[in-house]
Length: 80
Image (cartoon, rainbow, N blue to C red; front, side):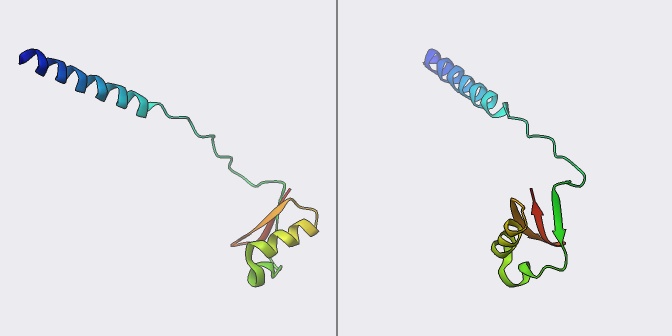
């Protein structure tokens, strides 16, 4: 009976050790870049966000040579 109990305790501790070592291995996230993106331009007076949201803003940006756009507090912001 003692042998079975010791074996079970050893298996439980082994399982806990394996699970904890797997959970501790995290992939580091990239460092955020602070500052102003030079390839971003916000159009404050553009009404694309008011009438069509992000979809209309993205269309406006593509028509003006940008890759995509999104509505922010500053207005319709386009990025290259």
